[in-house]
Amino acid sequence: MRHGKAGRKLNRNSSARVALARAQATALLREGRIQTTLTKAKELRPFVESLITTAKGGDLHSRRLIAQDIHDKEVVRKVMDEVAPKYAERPGGYTRILRVGTRRGDGVTMALIELV
Image (cartoon, rainbow, N blue to C red; front, side):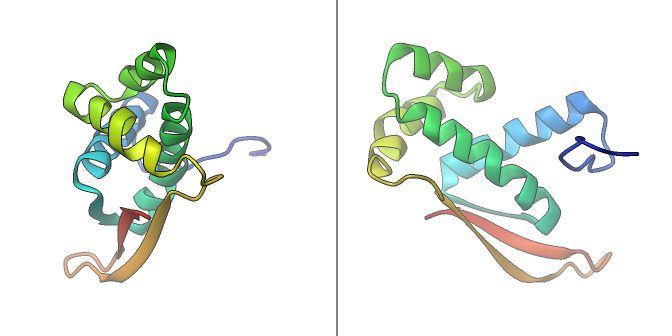
């Protein structure tokens, strides 16, 4: 039985899943919007939203917690100085997922995930 085992495996081992989440979160926070598969977007959403919620703290400890997952210093600076203050009054829901059709090669559903 699979009780209490949340999250999708995405056909990867645990370290590859973490690397994927970190890379996609970095790209999303840098660009503001990325296109990926619907399943990956659904997995990315809580990861990015928790990063933004942490960044709303605004102190050095929050910056270091963000830097554990986002290894690009410029993106960390952007999250702390631009993104988090923008959502200061918002209690959550910082991302939006839009379906954009299917991929031609294998028919998987594609999605745009963007910051609101």
